[in-house]
Image (cartoon, rainbow, N blue to C red):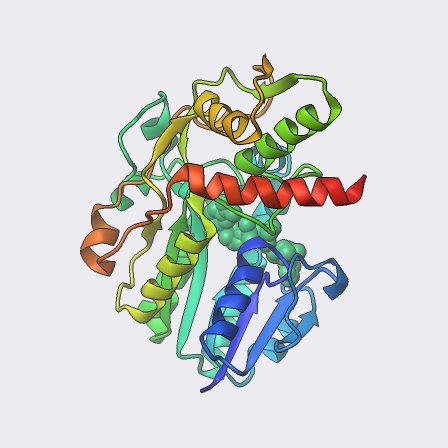
Length: 323
Ligand code: NAD
């Protein structure tokens, strides 16, 4: 069993992935993040936990040396509030993937995973709420999310060409809005499910029963629970699927329905104020799962309500512990 490298291991998905690999019996794991280990969302003492900036080629070479598998989940990213206001920072993540690919090729890595995003999809196909699911071909002609989405689309193609030209086995997942415990829920990088949970919990605990919702509440989205994200990633890595593939739930809701669900979990009803000047992203987005069903014989199945209950409970405990 050769060394497995997980980058972005101090973050949300990377932290869960290390746990999954440990549980599966993987003994040699190098977990890497730019954050110091005491700031990681999850840290497992059975992994070699390293703090390093992977935008640096030399650091990538040192980390990847001796590895059979690399999972690249490192990126400077966040929810719409972050990516709409930090396009240059998001695009600089191209250095991480480019340098990791170069190092992986040089050191003879067998399999390389890249975490892409539904933000690669053409914006014109997401212009109204309730649109049909996005199929993999809908990334072209290219009109992705400015900044973050362009970096993802470019990095997908870097993987493809490293595979075609140099024979490096690459696997690319297009994650759709992943949520769950041990993720960002405050501070500006959080995404809608965690942000709504936090706002509802604060309203409930403070007795101030008002909530600010970004946009007019009619935007549609699907949200993928972390266990489904991990299962899809595992299946993809074990497959021979070389083209990018959706890993996303197809249970579509409006943002208002998302708030309804969280209010139901909390047992409160709040007065909603809609901030239509806030960053909201595209009007409608959902995952078309025809290809993932056909090629991986699977699709995400965790009901949104069940995933939200677990996420709400975890954020509730964090907020209670911090007061
Ligand atoms: P996250 O922000 O929780 O984790 C990313 C981690 O990468 C962070 O801990 C960060 O410190 C680290 N990082 C950033 N720059 C680095 C650098 N230069 N060197 C080393 N580490 C660095 O994000 P996440 O939600 O866990 O996402 C993981 C991956 O999945 C990212 O590539 C992200 O773009 C992609 N993705 C996530 C979602 C989602 O909904 N969470 C959706 C689509 C795609």
